[in-house]
Image (cartoon, rainbow, N blue to C red; front, side):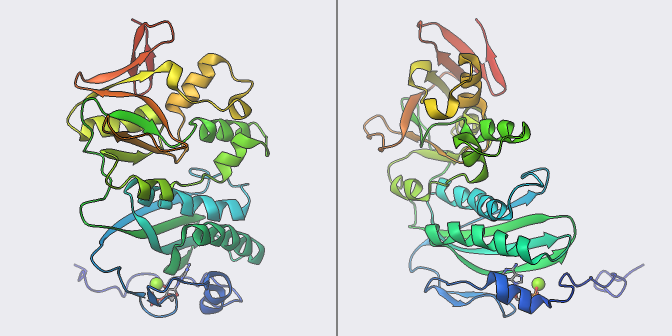
Length: 323
Ligand code: ADP
Ligand code: MG
């Protein structure tokens, strides 16, 4: 029997750094300006942080794997941007102010150009969102980027999935569908255009999330599509239902141009990778500028779509059925 505390049989971990030692690599690519709450960032055994007084912390983690969550031929700056964006989007969905993140990077090899591009895209978004890299880890293996992000929210004001009520307005923070369309265009060889831009660099909505504190009754960020993510709110809030209004689905002709009406509906309702906020608002609350009201929460379970001709279709998470 091996003593569980005996690690002597673990193989030695190969150094990832090749000629550049790990500390020089971190200093060169991952030391960046930090917010005042960071007493000690990368370089010691742990980060030392001052949490904002009287706030609750929100923590989230997401791992992005090459060929699964981002394509192998995506520019490194876009990989850096996108991997941080999906984590900031989770903070946004909780209504949190972004504060700090840890970066666990697995690299097949150390490539200076790749690391320079990756860190450029990463810090471009980090600076916009005011979030500081405070530490991490680097290992050798198939490319993967795991980020743990922390934010803060005043007690009781975090946005959750479980607060929707019948009668609430169902709102979305922008035009959905561009993320999936961009992925499809990328897979077809296209490298430019508005939809590909949304796919490469989704813009997480942390300002909207913070503005929704004390306003929204429930909130989630759209990673799997409006229907799938709305369904999470409905289930968490006690098996409620929803009716969406076809005429109210926002579209951006410059993005969805060229798609058939059916394709546009599928993208708007089922397209993932948008990283926009989907939230519910009590009937008396105004819809924020730039957001759209898609329909209403109802007591009757299930999801429905009121068509332009007035007929009501049953929606499922994976599609829709005709009556
Ligand atoms: P330890 O062996 O004590 O775990 P490491 O050698 O893994 O330390 O890391 C040394 C320091 O560098 C730590 O402060 C760690 O947070 C930081 N660090 C490691 N990788 C990264 C990275 N990818 N980005 C930012 N900081 C990192
Ligand atoms: Mg370590």
